[in-house]
Image 1 (cartoon, rainbow, N blue to C red):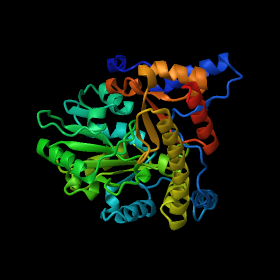
Image 2: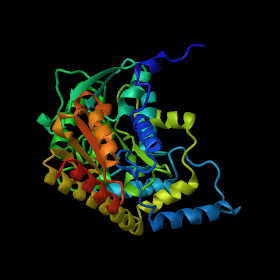
Image 3: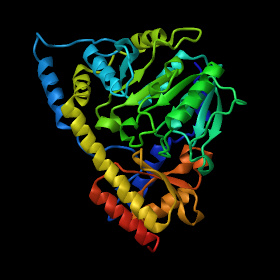
Image 4: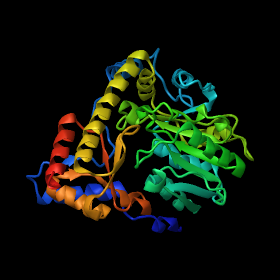
Length: 393
């Protein structure tokens, strides 16, 4: 037996695990410290009433012979797939239920989708980048090339036809930078992918936070996107499902390369995945009802208000930042020329506030730190008060 030696090529400590370890160590050494965590992108508001009502009803159904459910459809129950299609219809996009695949979350599918592709493919990712895109491809032994995302291009790199790629990861709105592609910019990526005969894996986990009318809620608002884009979505940030686990991946039937990827993904899922529980899918279905959408929008508005609180404080401190408008993340330049981990330690030790070092997202993240709006108004305001005090503002 031989272990996969590619494990030695990835960072031995996952970024967020390192953040958690450093925070726990400081907390152990300073038990009196009241730490405010703004590093991990975990939601804090409870599931909306429409979701919990639907899940309670589903639990009761599971206790009755006539309504009990065993194994479900590999793609997901038709009622949820139809609701997701209805959601896309609201953006002027027509989908078939057979193009929707319900999953336990975007992170899982972002890694699992790679089963469809040969290890000889070259992968293009932006830098800074969500670590999962890189690590999963390193583990599979693929070559990775990078598109630099910097202040010079507003952290929105555009395609370079001199670079060849087979698999392209995009995240819009972006994690960690909060930057979001307009329709025109996304169209350029679609054209590039078609020219290179490449597939785009679009991480759309933060779609519900979009406020700019020029930013599409789905890639399929862009002409020809169904020919090259697989869209991977999550209810974690949209509806607070971080602890409930549900998302969905759209694989259009028009995705024809040497094989039909829709058929391949169904084959993969039926081989390795037995589906999301009926109870969770009922809760997810409630997200797309009028009552569910109202509750979800109220929660998102709460987090967006937190982002405004942070942006106001950063403006007062004269700190340059990105994100916040179409995203729950604030990506700020570390003041005083400090490095990412240096400012992380300073913020933790002097203000008892936890962020995520930008360096953990790639070389272009050096000198930046990410803060999230997933907190209470009170903690967000207190964290910003401490930040201003630490900086003498």
